[in-house]
Length: 171
Image (tube, rainbow, N blue to C red):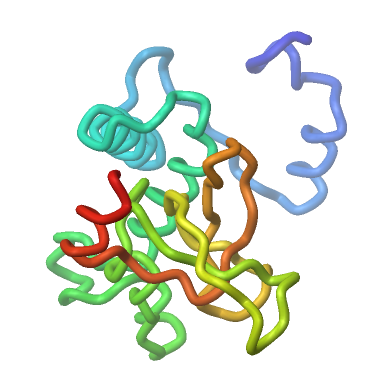
């Protein structure tokens, strides 16, 4: 599929921008500084590589790690002076976001979690690796958990292992 100005010349996109009187501009190839989104993508890529290297997580989990990194970046304030230490979401809605899911348990940390299919009071804690928040899965505090079998499941009530538990679990 053709990309760029030549490829969009006679497309629905051109009709759309003419209909709504949208001014379209183009950036030069390989000039990432002309588009702020490219810089943010660079930060996300850097963080994905750093987490993968530091935690020793498998590269095939990059999709979950990408969600973790971009989710964390979207709810924490950047060093933009005009934002005054607030996120874009907070500036627009005047609501402070909850960062608990990203702070209490880190990427690829060992956790005990409960599977959603098991009912109280019989739900036992299972050992797994945290792959970040599981949005739209179970409760608001659900985390994706990598089971020892290699399967991924949403885990509710995930909690990090204590130092004593790490020693006993032979992690």
